[in-house]
Image 1: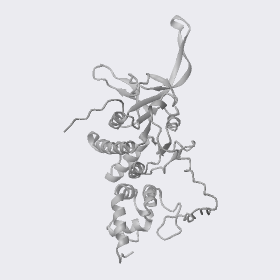
Image 2: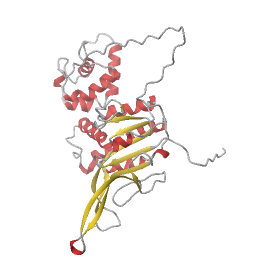
Image 3: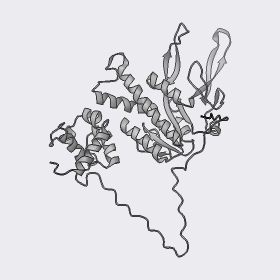
Image 4: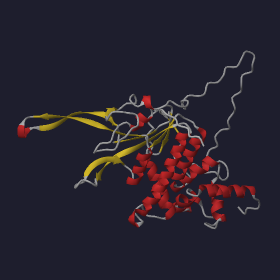
Length: 355
């Protein structure tokens, strides 16, 4: 076999993590990446004119959404905003599925080990998005945590991502660029001798792009230790990919004498609850929200899910939806949605179903 050697930098979509204190402008900075579409797990983009996908109501819905983005390539940059709220979806689903009161239910942090494995699977899906030709930006909140350095006798405080520490470590390894956003406070000394005091005169929003004792940071772009918080220093290192998802595709003008195309008449959106088996708006209890999102996406009705539960012997056919416990909806229906959907398809193809 002949060995092929290549040289030079390879231009690829970038994997970027932006983390910082609340209100610093993580979302606004992410919105300046090329042709972005947001997966908003916390509702932080509602005040901005950005393109966004449906907000995932469960960890299963989030993973399915990432697979759809990789397959359909709807944007130049996918933004997951934020990683820590996505982790909350993961923890909620794990606790419901395994009947844990909290992630601390199992001794020695075993529950968090399950979370780490699932979090890694999400990063694999984000890598699939990058490999499909899109930049990926992940935002996260920052928090102060104690840090014990092995070669130091005392611990000290430093900024880190507001995630389980092993999830944060995995996310840092995954990223091509890890950028910490914070205010750089300007302190002036007023007075002399024992009466001297430090006075804060202002704060500049700053991107810290390299590792320091008080925070994590890295980049493969050659950025200096710190730059002003703007997209300008980042732009040369991020390829511009894909069309702007907010702009409609241009339509060719018809030639003279050619009949004008009739716009397809889309059927009026059916109000939820108008037909048998669909959900009436506001008619379901809160615990059905994650399942309802999957049902709407895949065209599965509430009656079909209730029939599935009855045919599996989990509930009687006359059990109303409001009597289904949250542990069953969030802990069984949502995590096992692919199996539920497959069974529903079997029921549709079969006959003589007694419901």
